[in-house]
Length: 89
Ligand SMILES: [Zn+2]
Image (cartoon, rainbow, N blue to C red; front, side, top):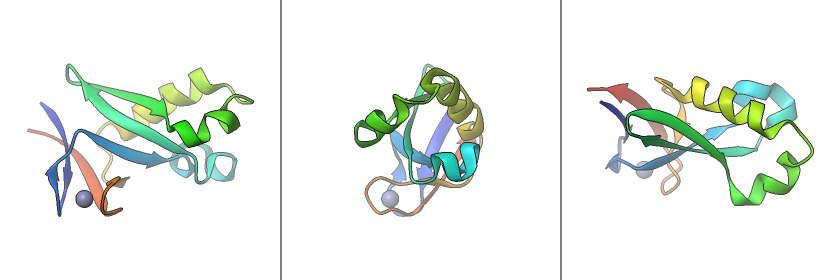
């Protein structure tokens, strides 16, 4: 089972992936909200970044974001901004 773990908050239901990880400077500072639904990684665009993503191929980037986040060890906790790792237990 996939879980996202923050050192400070334990297992959390949602973490951010910085767009830089998949789109370099094009997506720098764009936040994707990563969740796990039925053990599948899901990505949605943070509401604040929806306007920016509307000019890009959002569907494609969401797919990339979900792929990248799967097992990634550098997600961000929305509460403490600390590092979140995705792991399978
Ligand atoms: Zn945290």
